[in-house]
Image (tube, rainbow, N blue to C red):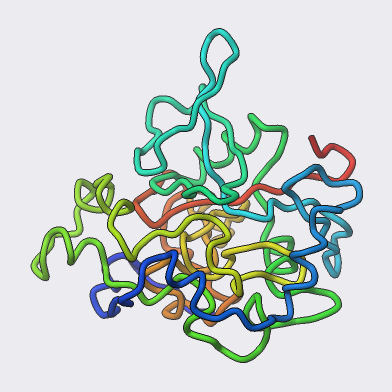
Length: 275
């Protein structure tokens, strides 16, 4: 596995794709290894709607959200409304809970700590490294490099886009927190895509967008001597290669409190306690 000091800074080298997310979704309608599983994933046995049952090689069964995470805000009267996917959630964590981003934009600008709380508010949790990897690679029946198979397809997932930092602030951007957390970064065209809009970017288990779109925080402390550091997986819409191919992409350089426009998440749940 490869590590990068800052994946966002390295994104300067990435070039953009011309098509919008809707165009990318329709770019290739051929059948991928995950298509049959995606079609059948609504019948996930002991898992609730929107989740897929995954069998990990060593840790047994787990339920995993088929889409990256979005957020809803809970009102005092019990009502809920969509939280803007482009707004950081600092200071409002307690009123938010996670929902699968099925056909909607997933939440960026979120830290591992905040994602953990959002999943917990929905009776779920972040996935472990083993669980996330099994869902992405189709283990144990398969061990694909990419969610859709072993052969790389640059059009399958939402990746290789032009950096929004460069588009917004130019090639002399500072990459400071204000720029990296600017709400405009995830609102540009040909950037972040709605969950599931890249039809080929689906795993054997029917989980969408595990490569590209947004980095996905997991429940992991990669440095045994520093529990403040976390991991996120899969790459994002600018880069999904620098830190490893496909399902092996893993960034370990950031604290669990870190967030920027590229950081998202996905929830898992124990089969026995799935909501």
